[in-house]
Image (tube, rainbow, N blue to C red):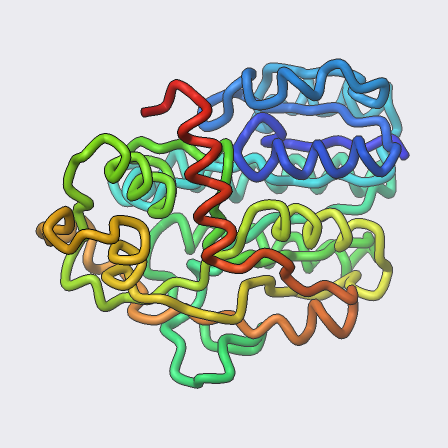
Length: 315
């Protein structure tokens, strides 16, 4: 198939692109490199299915129109977004424009060309988990940041195109994804940041009391889930979660990675109002509709991520 992947030079996008190419599709990547990096996809450029990298923004309606008119995409995996919670609190307008308005522009092209939409949302839209069976797709939402608010607004638009126009769409909500190619700086994920700090002999800084829990999904499992959602008609019009099904407190995660309690310290939280106390995913729907289950354990994933960071110049 001809596939457009927005945000394809980003962390998860790079893994989705790799999977789509391995599955034999022709892939166009659109990314403005605000979060992504061209080096993330450098090894993919040699693949015969890698058609083009376009440095551009989903806010450019003319660019989107030309791309869709020329290539007649059958699926659009829409991962392009502003993803930083703190940035959304400091500058909500940019996040709203990219995540909500930009998604609308994508939807309009997909409606015109009858292109299926796989929309990447986030577990950050959920309220805290109160059930040890985990958070299902029916769990209450709590929009504790403009990032979460913009994602829910976009989700609602995506689903409205399914009901109003019969457009095949699916909303995917992966839980906290980590692994190789994730940034190790302040805007990166907690696993990558902790590993880098450990390797550099620096303290692992935990915001707040560290009792907040996260369900950590290895990136290859996440990419497989996202890709499969595009292939299946069973999830059209649906919201679908994906996670490991195991949560771990940030304190426990730091101990697991550092192995040395003296390297761990607690600092004041920079955005406590957007913190979610407990995140634990229930992926039963993904298993039922897609046959998807995670394959990589947390311990395996941490080891793979550490090996990758050690093999790069990120330390």
